[in-house]
Length: 491
Image 1 (cartoon, rainbow, N blue to C red):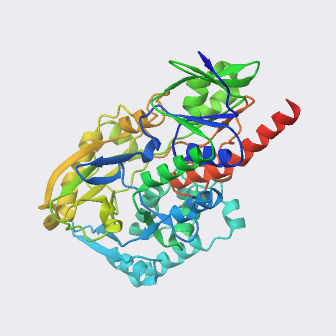
Image 2 (image 1 turned 90 degrees about the horizontal axis):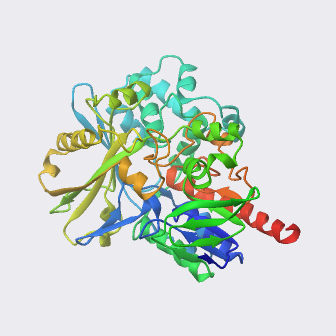
């Protein structure tokens, strides 16, 4: 049964889709957002169990000074709802002798002392310290023009231009490619990594009061307050194309009409499944199939019977814990690295309301292949369990439950459908590599008239995954508004 039309239908209620929809609704368009899940949020869907609240994956790092979240909330007139709480973080570095050395960064902007403490943990000589300072300074002081010149240069190529770097520095850059750009250092553009490090290195990073899911709800409320509609638990099975332009979408139960559809379902699922290859030029289909995905992320939750974890964020690395092309392929064969990089967030460090009084929940995990069918995920999660006890032997004794073991399969189920072998469970999405990121990010305009993309895959650049999605929402909304106005004028 066909329903009365909207001006714009948005497929997917992730952060990009919600930001785009809320802005368009505020600007007077009739918006419907349709999502397959029972809650909005996509990858940032919230969890709530036994008094604990948080995200399914460890998420942190909204800059207080300036961020796409701030831009979006300001444009929507709800800036006062963006309550950001800074907190401390602890970097753990495993030296070759097997000892884990902590470096604590207090809440606020990082200073030189934090960098020098990291160098001491790396056991750098004075000469190596000088090299490391010079290389990192070069990266964070690049001008926009210098960054643009490096758009198609990978982190690996950029490192090679600097000769033999101290192994811990090389490892740091490779790990940051995994952590910040969610890719492999051989493939990530130095443009992307340097831009992210500039933004977050010079900012006071923070966690939102109430968690990211509160921000999801704030955006959903803004959309509805401006007349928009969110239809949940409704999987879009087809984006309808008639005479070369979109005409709406079809779910199992209904057909919803609209002259513009914005997909927050990922470029590959949109083109290859929801619309269909037959509606695109073959060269564009091949381009879409070739876009390189991000790494995946697998994680778990630790419940502590006492609040023993002192800091808000924990990052653990070693000189050999990064994932490169070789280790990525070794994982496919079931070979787990001796040490893995771990990332963890303690939500109640920032907002005590995120956990019952006197208890804590830690979200912790590591990077992996994005294949929803990856067989090594459980082994990686067991490695994280084992490594946590090695890193924090005293605190580990207070764990009363380990739960919530999730990975690429759950990511795909919540967000982007798997339409190509080995893909679908990406931690952030597509387009994190040379040729597809930075200035080369896929366009938000699809070749089919009236079809647009929003989310990490298109439009946003220079931020971490969640922030790229929000940035895409901010950037895509005006493009869609103009398209709607043009159609009104010219038909």
